[in-house]
Structures are given as C-alpha cells and as structure tokens.
Amino acid sequence: MTALLEAERLCRNYGGLKAVNDVSFQVLEGEIFGLIGPNGAGKTTLFNLMTGLTPVSGGTLRYRGELLTGLSPHRIAEKGFGRTFQNIRLFKGLSALENVKVSQHVTTKCGLLSAVFCSPASWAEEKEVDEKAWELLKLVGLAGRATELAENFSYGDQRRLEIARALALKPQVLLLDEPAAGMNAAEKHALTEFIRGIRDQFRLTVLLIEHHVPLVMNLCDRIAVLNFGELIAVGKPADVQNNRAVIEAYLGAE
Image (cartoon, rainbow, N blue to C red; front, side):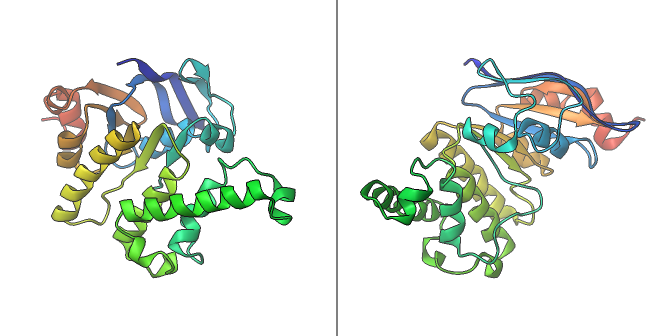
C-alpha cells in the first residue's frame, strides 16, 4: 500500500488560537483511516483544511504527490475528494434524487448550450446521471423515497443521503464527518459493514471522524488522535488504544 495523502506540518491559526498545530501524517491507499479526539480537538478543522474549505496557515497537503494546499474546494473535489459534514448540508427543498443528481454535475462534460438545445450528447449524459442517482439511492436503501423532499427524512436517512451524494462525485477519497451521530447500536453496526462495503466496491480510501470509539476501533485500519490541535498518536487500533497520551486525553491523568 502506498501513501495516497500526505500532510506535513499542517497548521491553522485563529489569532492566538492554534486549532491545528504542526500535524503530519500519511493516509495509505485503500485504507480506512480514523480521526478521533475530545471535543474541540481540531478534527473537523483538519477535514476543512484537507478539502479546501478553510485556508491553511502553514504546512502542506499532497495527494498522489501533487500539492493541494491553496486549491479551491471545487478543484479538490474534481481531483477525487467527496465528503459529508458534521452538520448535514443537504438541499432540503429538493428531493433525494435531485440531491444526488446535483452532485454529479461536477463530473459532467456537456456545457450550458448543449443542455439548453438538448443535444444528443447532453440528453445521453443526463440519462446517465439519472440512472447513476437511482443506483446510489438503492445502494443506501433510499430508492423507495427518491421523490420525497430531503427535509422530510429522519436524521439517519439524511446521513445516508449525504453519503450517496458524496459518492455521486465519483471520489477516490471519501471523508465522513461523524457518520454515526444519532444512530443506535444496530444502526452503527450496519454502518460499519456499509462503509467497508463501499470501500471495497468503489475502491475508495476512507477517512472518518467519529466520537463513538468502539466503532472506530472495529472499523479502521489505522487511527490518528488529536488533542488541542496537536497529533498525539498514530497507529493501529490496538496500539492507539493502549497509548498513555491517548488515555490521558480522554480520561485525564492520575
């Protein structure tokens, strides 16, 4: 397995506050990489740096050796990054099907004029987008509700719709921000199997932030732990679980 994503001394400062401070790690191609830490540790900020939503204050991020630092979110998405958010960001006034179709238009090739004049190429591409959206909704178990507005979905179903929308970008790297939030034990178990399944089916590299530590320990190949914006451990689940600095970050020192 080769390094797909490399962060080197990444920093994000807000005045005197160092939300992410000198963080370096590698994510290997094809692995499920977990990011954990107490509330306010800088996990979502790190995801925002990786996807271009927040400018980097210092350090570099490379994808397949190519510098990502300074690129806009849509350019990073075009390179193969898809993500969900801690606070769900669906188009709640659109149907489930429309939400997934909107995401696919980042990867379409026909321009505005082709769409306006309904050229054969535009029609064929739109048909493909529609079919792919139905396929993804079926994958996440929402095909039966394709025409319903996203605002009428339960919290768990909105989470699944977000994952379908992220997959519509045809990502090579999928970032999931607290995908198990609000789920019960049975739903969390099903989510674990689902993430493994889509990793294998779509040949993805998956990064996830999650507060439910047992889920992360069971699902992830490797885990990074942040505390107060600093990386305090990286390794396999068993190694991280027994790391004294990690135990102190969660439970406090004696």
